[in-house]
Amino acid sequence: MEPSIRSTSALLGEAPRPGADIPPDVALSSFWRKNSSTQEPTELANLLRALRKVAGHLGPNVGRIEYLGMSHGDPAAIVVDPAMVMGQYPVPGKKTDYLVGLVVHEALLQMEWSERVFKNLLPDFRKMPRLALVIFQKLVQTGESIYVDRIADRTILGRYVEKTRGRALMEASAKLRTEILTVDALLYLWWVGTWGKNIERLLEPVYEPPLIHLRGLSEELRHAYDRSPSVTDRAALRADLYRGAWQAVGDICLNLTLLDRRLVWHPDELIRVTGHNPERRITNVPRKVVLSANLAREIEATLAVNSADITPIIRGIVGHDNPDVAPTSRWDFNIPAHPVVDRRMVARLSAVFTQYARRKKIQSRGLTSGRVDRRRLWRAPVNGRCFSQTDTLPVVDWNVTLLLDATGSMRGNKWRMVENTVGNLHRALLGFPNRLSAYAYFEIDGICMISRLIQGKKLLSVPPAGQTASGQAILAAAYFMPRDARRKVMIHVTDGESNFGVDVQVALDFCRREKISLITLGCGVKDKKLMTAQYGKSIQFLQSFGQLPQAVERLLKWTFLYGTDRQAATDRMMERILGERQEKEENGTA
Image (cartoon, rainbow, N blue to C red):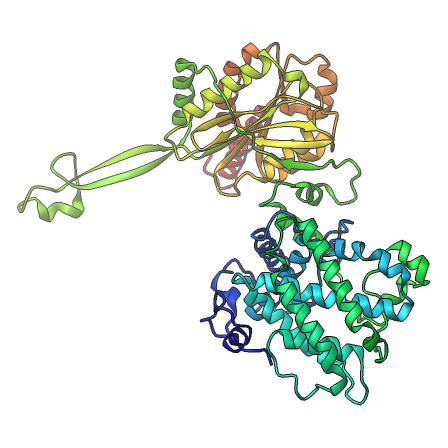
């Protein structure tokens, strides 16, 4: 049973903690976690995203939070066992509360440099025999848990940590043996007594003298956080407190039985001194559930949709075994663009979108003039409103994406001409329910960067740099185009062949599957044969970037009329005409 908040606060002489008026049996996460799903990959991804957000409120030095099976080799990672939550979706609120408390506890250990406390005590560890070393490390581990839990109690996150601690105390109590006097029981009594629980039934006379010193250590740890603003100084202070506590209780602890003889902390140097084999550390631990490779990939791809690193999305499209995939990241620069807008070009582009848009009929009834409405004739002798009028309005429902090569060869006048083209299109489509997206791609330190150039009514820019990763850029831009009924057009502008990342043909195949009309404009290309080999019939060549605005205008008109392939559109039209003629002949009506 967990201690009540009121009894703990009264025992310690503290003010009520944040959230003290919430009943302890209520799932706190149910108040804020609304993004849930019944699908396993989506729900596990949503839960992991929620845990990362909670940890992000603590500070920047938290470490990476991931499931077991998603490890990226980061020693500072907080690894969550998925067995705690798998099997029931959406994940119940009480399980979420437990995980939040666990993550907060581990995150605070990272932020308060608990590892440094052990490193500060390494000279003491070298001098100790094996039994004393294990006992001292367990004392330090318990003290660090009390220290960070005290910090968590200053906010509402302490309520989550309390739920996690209650389960940990129950598990520790189940491992105790009452017929013998043990160090494990002494540390358990210290841990439990710190939070105001009744320990009379387990309290033996031999435990009372060391518990007096350990309770004093708890009070010192309670105020240690406020003694210095430096995390390094706080770690050194806690190390000194543990040394003093060991001098007071070490001899008594050595006369007690130790049930669990596994080391808590064992760097390589300490292993050579003690002869401890770290592999034994996991032999008696129940096997944990590791995410399958496919499930881990689905979770990573789901998380990547709302994160900067979109490499899992690219791998999910081209295959996880593709060796050409380069790291891909979204990074929106805040450099304002200053394009030179051509008003005539803007007017012509607006006319193109309006002229070739589909039409929607709007009928107005109850008018005093127009065509007679048979459904309103009864109003003629009343008020004369028996007329109607049918109007046809254009519905501009095109989904246009501009993908612009911003590599090192695009510096100078080339990039300024590209910015002017984006500005003309953006101005032409203002006020329409149309979606215009513009992305620039470039390479920095082996990473393909994708940056938005349109944010609301603002036009942004990027500094051109790096190699050309056209294939991955096309995949990223195509993936983030909305999946709706609007006709989708992507215009890719580049001045050279792709020389970085996945093959362009993979991107062309993906656009074809997603029914995206992709046209590549090669401006001032030197090797046209190589570009034709990469892009096939989807590329058109321009002599210079000065032709780009007019080329985009003609290209949009061509695409709205015939699609990306005029010959294919003509063949489909001829097939339809021949099919209708053959059907008439068979029915004898030709």
